[in-house]
Length: 359
Image (cartoon, rainbow, N blue to C red; front, side, top):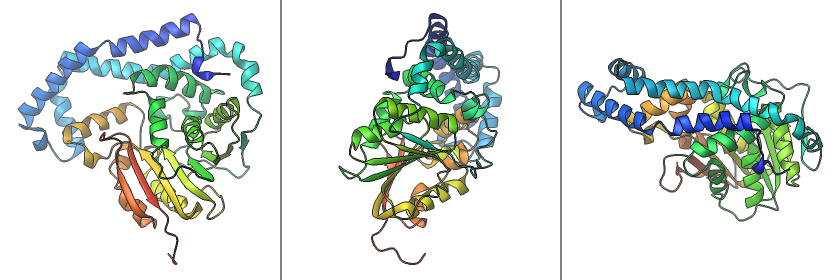
């Protein structure tokens, strides 16, 4: 099955097209709202730099000023409408075509790509019962939530809204690793397997293991792997506690995972990466822009987007110095920053030293 060419039925396609066209077609409203934001900054502080340091105070001042501005309120209403409804629209679109897809979905549940679950697995508290991205029931809230998000939300919706396309960006990030070949790659938080696929395309001779908390996204990653003939090993394990052997990978990656977890778990992810890497192995960790790289207006926008978009850990994560966390975990030659001059995605690359002393 070529998921890339999935054809939706007319009703589902029309609903998704309507949502996208309404969101994308509101440029006049967004321009007017932006003018209102600039007026608010000038009235309240005189400049972006003079806005309050505290994000909550900054948000309170700007929202109070903008509350009665019609274009700003319409823009917020459109964003809220899209955030609240895009997942449900994608589920409805999937359920219209599910019967037609079912035989192929079942067939792709077995093949060279394997999926292992464990009786002792327990999802961490920060993940359990959280509706990330305002997905009703969370990542396991629908029997085919992995397909719904991977092939409808991401491919039919997010890719259209994302500058340059999210699938192209995954390939760009995968290609940033320093070597042309890796024997064993671990993809932490592999989700539906689309970044895993970018790794497999970039390093075709590598053996790839993927971990994730969500069984439903892992089930779709298995389908993606089998659809393309890959031999991935997928495990329902936490990135911060994979239970894999010491010193067994020469590249550990994650794609836009870290903002989905609290600071303590992020530090544990870097420590776990260090543990499972061979001496001389590398990490390639990508995530959202650091607040230190954004001005106060950009921080405010990112923070509001996260708050209304179902991202409970965004602010704490985006405020972390990931370079320091990598160094604290024992990594050397740490390099971190945006890709190709952009602030997003933010990528951390580092090496586990060949000589590792007692730590």
